[in-house]
Length: 100
Length: 469
Image (tube, rainbow over all chains, first blue to last red; front, side):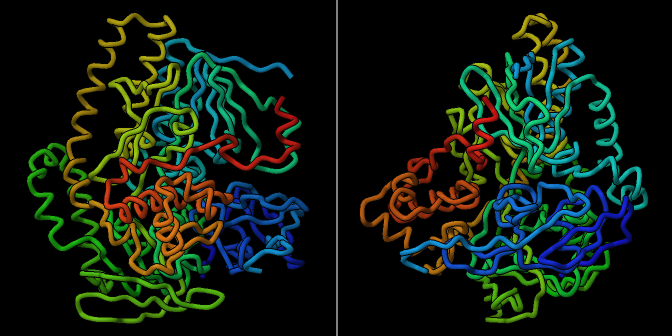
């Protein structure tokens, strides 16, 4: 879906769903994942549809991820840091939810 | 923690915010600039400092506007304003207290999270108008400008086949940038009506006052034509197809139905002011019929209807980076006058040459706004199963039904079926919601109104709420 042009910056490695991804400083988490070929970011909250980045500028909230244990992080607004542990945002478990 | 106080707090460090900072500092004001993005420049000049320093050949390719903007960024960085990036405003109180959170987790204890101002300037820019089509929530369907942000901020470009769909100057600009980067565009679905140029022609003489915009546009069109990108006209409907990812785009044009393979579908229906903060503050807004959006009502200095709150740049009326920059200077002069740092006559004197340039830069706007008038068919989707509220997964049919049940305002529809209640707090559906209600009731969106924007305008945790006090 996306590819990286030659990157400059200090090397950073992050963990995405147990996979080690290489990126550089100054990148947002969303950009780092897309540049590594990752497209699926989260499940939608109501019906669990696959979702990915839409706007890349903090408006749409489609790029939400779990970063270092914190859910609902806007990954297009957060810069990568060495050793960050990132997971896909799972759909919350809602008992008695009509559309579940 | 003590609340730091400023004469002026500027929200946003795009062209308008940077210009306002430079001018207000020039008048000796104590200024704070807050921006939710990591670097100065706004979306238009995203990551410009890094581009100039570390990706210079690409920076040069971006054109003369960028070298000029680079000068503005340098003046901004040296003007003596305090500048905090990577921080998002979630509330502004009537006493002009601005509350923020850090975007990166775990940083909130390090610095103040509330600031007080005598005046506030909102310069948060514009956002893309949502373009709801069937399948637009699939991974691989993105806002057109997202790829521009990825290119500028991260040196990341699309791989595989790309389809662009919509209308507007930015669509053309981004198409040509993708071609420059060697990206294969398998189709451009032009949704602009074929009689648009005819309709815009009466505004052409005025637009010729700034021919550079027209020359740029013609250059982009020529480049697209000669590149061999298949351009389709008379588009009636578009559907994104796929299961886990986008695989195909199906569209109906004057030539019938076609399906093309696609790894990426980029949508664009122009840009609209980001009114989240001006709405939060209760500023009066008006409906701009030509471009079908709401804008805050401003006087000639950028003052809103709320005392102490002014607006500069594209979050007032979308007019591009040059106009934004000039409006930032003007709003700053007025702020200096209001705070007693500048006499009224000095303000007027300094503003007069800026106003002359402003008038010139605005001259092409009626032509462009008419040429790219948003079409109702792309705002109110015909297919009732099209998702409108992406967060709460509410479609056109559900909204129409709710209106028929008697919910005649966006807030009542929201209360009944949750459209606009999700994480994005209506940013991605509010305009569409008003348009659908208006269409159902056969009245203007101006009479339907807009979702009520409430604090916090960005989701904050209880922990963050507590630590802001």
